Length: 102
Image (cartoon, rainbow, N blue to C red; front, side, top):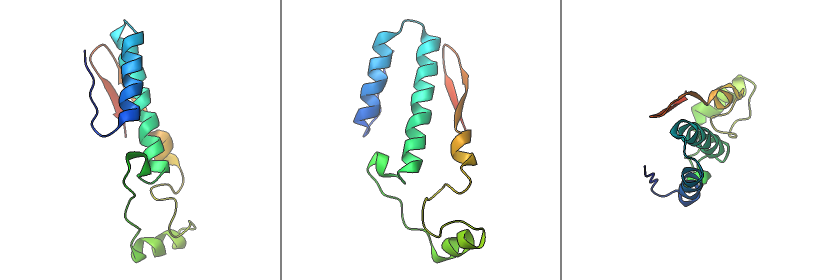
């Protein structure tokens, strides 16, 4: 079994450490799924900086809509209520795959 993730050295190092320390593939894949969830959440929280690319600023229309709904105009991007961020989770992990939603 081999894992390769381009452009994300820290994540790659974490995955290799997990891979080397476990013999049960189901547990390994479950841990990988949770590692991906954490990484996606960190990328959302940092507005893309986690992967080294800052997201484009919100459009004036989007800023106006956010304010109309009681949220700050510009930041945090992709987080209003926090429900999407909190819903990112591993829904299945077996010997062959981990499924992360949403």
